[in-house]
Length: 330
Image 1 (cartoon, rainbow, N blue to C red):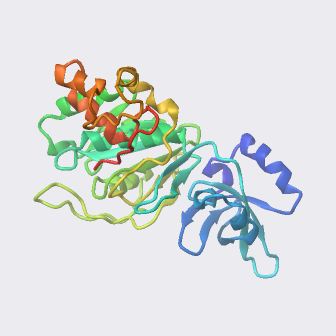
Image 2 (cartoon, helix red, strand yellow; image 1 turned 90 degrees about the horizontal axis):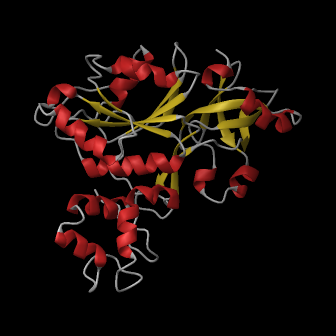
Image 3 (cartoon, helix red, strand yellow; image 1 turned 45 degrees about the vertical axis):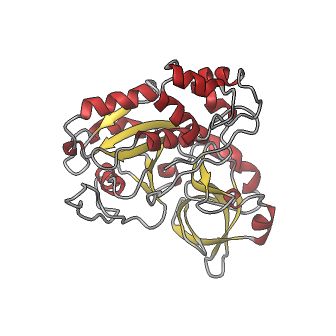
């Protein structure tokens, strides 16, 4: 198996050329553990730590190597031990605010497409899907919404319609990963050795879908609970798998909570109507909560602004006026 299998191409080679003269070897991080990383190269897979220089130069922990990163490693000729000396510039980065901390957390790097996986039935939560969508748009990757466990809902079309209203440009697929229904529709996202990451809550079937798309059992799965149709948490750390048909998958543990890290101004465009209303608020730093003279709340009260749309606006944390409160929602 060559590095091209992991997505290496001429563009990555150009980024690496300056490092090749230093005796370094290109590789891709396929697994991340507390004290080391697993790095795949052209010839083998290595357990690698990071140099002190690399750690000291990182402004944030998210600047350090993560799953999906292409890196430059040095392999010691004496014992074959490996050390990561550089991280190649990323094309995309899936970053959230770390749970309970004020720092960014890297979930995956250099992904082309992100499957936002949710399950029909008890897990379905429109606000959560919107937050995941904002996360992916911020990353630079292409979002795709995957509604799993289609057998658990009688109103599949209605629920799909609700998602289409969020952003009709985002593809939505309804599947049953266990029964293979619809999973074949996802194959074309891997064309050209592209990397696809899976995100979603615990128990929505990400590991089952990973196994289905890989054509082999790579991730442990557990039976669905009868009372709510949800699976049990099985994935414990992020890792990258390659497919025999081409392309790679990054599976990750389910996220109990999701808060965006420094959302970009560009992702606020879908709420331009609310931002326009906010310019008429009495106070420039209006939080649209209980302040007098709030034009946004007035529009909701009049029925000119849909209340659910406004709730999504504040939950996603995209209030665009200066000083606005950020909400993570749940």
